[in-house]
Amino acid sequence: MKTLTVGTILKPQGIRGELKVKPFTDSAETFRKFGSVRIDGEAYKVLSVRTGDGMVYLALRGVPDRNAAELLRGKPVEILREEAPELPEGSYYIADLLGAEIVTETGEVLGHLKDVTKAGTDIYTLETDGREILFPAAEGVVLSVDLAMRRITVEKKRYLEVAVL
Image (tube, rainbow, N blue to C red):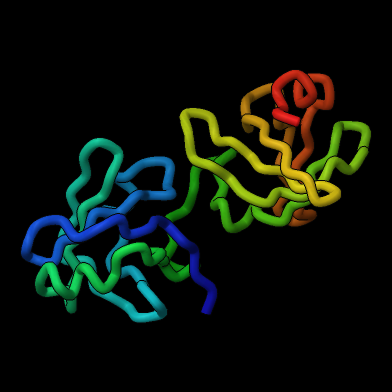
């Protein structure tokens, strides 16, 4: 059973078991499409979703009060891969990108994608020879993404201009 991590629980919200979640999706509104989520491998039916300030507030069946919600603090929120909404062209799930080889347009291997930090423009963390290099996944830097080949192609000149070496 393959899952995708879509957020992390920050803390309980209020006394009725609602959870404040930091989303890892492009929009907090995406959570409205989820009928259920998984936390520690256990499925929870989504009862309600509120959004605000880029955060998601979830009410889940089986989390009746603040004490139950407190036990879930810091845990990842996952969905089953087959329940994941279709993404628009050019959008990808972070889990599908992690570990991908990052190469220049001439095929020079720069390293592998270790992490993605969500921001206005996502920040990719490339790992090479035990070092980490950060760069924005901006238009003009990332030329293409090939999920089948697990390869992200970057324009070397732009990459070198923006990368934090």
